[in-house]
Image (cartoon, rainbow, N blue to C red; front, side, top):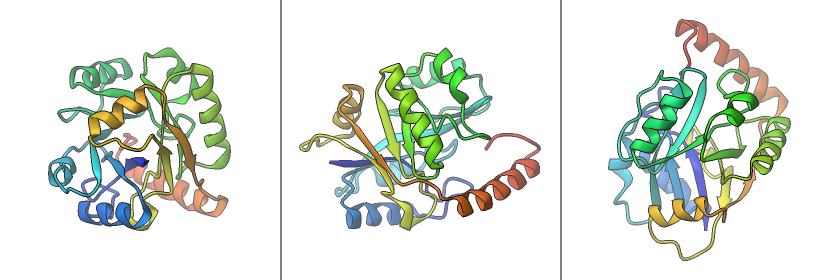
Length: 218
């Protein structure tokens, strides 16, 4: 089974995909499971959880005070703006697992020091919107820690769904079984990476949005 563990919908402020479009893309590309990781939102899961075609993991990309954290398997919205430790604790209280998202992304990643310092349940080893060197370093960091890994497209538009994913054993039927397989270290990661020209455009856009937000993380 292929699982894209980092996808955004229009419930993210910068997302363009409707929840239904995400499912359509998953079916088209052979993605059997998807984690909807909207920025500080948890609305899409209720819309998609009973779609009957693709397994959907209840998830969120949480903006902690020092960087983004992917929460998998949660049962409620995790507030943004808390410290790293407070965010991890809140994810655990919600029954979920905390993964350090794209740790080497310069404006929204946690960085290597924080990823090593705090008790994350795992690391996002590959992200299709990260540059090749960042993905290489993330994978190396994940292997050095020895904890479970995730990977995802970080898709904000429909056509990018599936550009990054993990491969898991076949036969998984529920999101709980998928998350357990991830936590049992049964996931292998594959992903595209962002090319140089796209990185420049993304960097300019991100800095502009950051300034407009008053230097607050999304």
